[in-house]
Length: 109
Image (tube, rainbow, N blue to C red; front, side, top):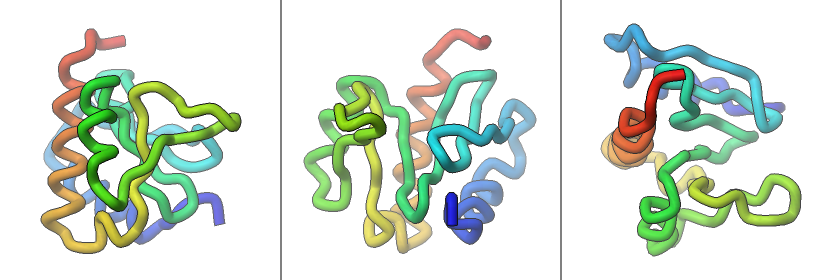
């Protein structure tokens, strides 16, 4: 299974009212792009977030967060969240909100 389709639907529901969201297959899973910039995604059952260097550092204080390692090295500014960390809807909304805030701070592509 390349990514959790149930999680994809939950994220789609959160982005439902937005017109600047596109989906793209990447990192062996699914990514959600805001104005052409990666915001978040799913790899297997992990929630993938782009938070920037400071945001990722803050996120790693959560017990369900870990560095995103795609090629054996941490990818700067990105984290994975274990399923337990986004199981509750309010937790998923919080994580997606953090990634959305970062994505919106970037220039459109």
